[in-house]
Image (tube, rainbow, N blue to C red; front, side, top):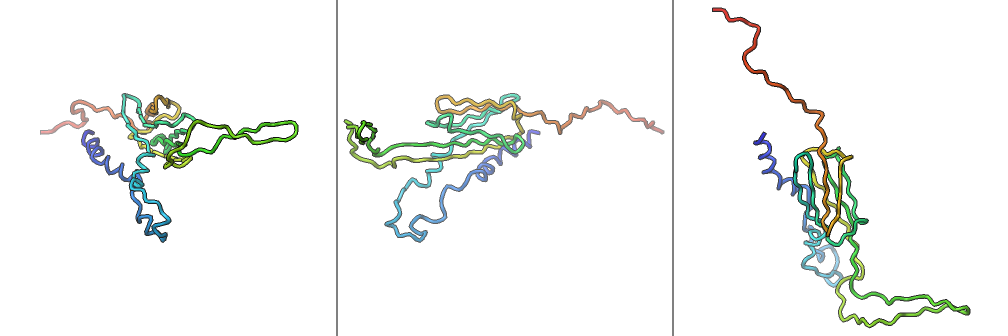
Amino acid sequence: MSLTRQFFRELRPLFRMLEEPTFGRPFPPTRRGFPASFTRFDPFEEFQEIRTRPAVDVREQGDKYVLDADLPGVPKDNVEIRIGDNGRSVTIEGKITEEGGSRPAETTQANNESDSTAVTKASDETQISAERPFTRNVQFTRTVWLPRPVDTQNVEAKLDNGVLTIIAKKAEDKASTVIPIKVGGSSSETQQS
């Protein structure tokens, strides 16, 4: 049994590589048929996916699995957890909405009896530089495969200080049976000399 576990531990990096998409793109943006002036060069473009994919730790604690995923700044309402593949996989999906850069002026409607006019609120804030987009919506998905299936009715999830903790109880393995081993040579044959 220990050889099997050691074998799968050695193959774990290979399984992770197969699970995760490639980081680079086949061609740089300038070679996709667009002139260089139409594309904005981002030296960290390949690492964008790393920033938007949550890091996940998986631990086995007795009869349950504990998964910890880093989700800083993601509200609870923007996270969805699914157990799939007959309890063998846990998928975490989420959406991050970031706002930055220059924001449009806030407008309010002042209703008079004769007509309605738009009033712009004056602000003490002055934008000096804006390099981030006004809004950015990023969606992420992360699937983790478990060694044994889990009971989908006994799964708990908690989001605390940017760390999502999922506790999933292992399902009973109904397909396996323990075979008792008899001691001694109890055979019905008698030896003849």
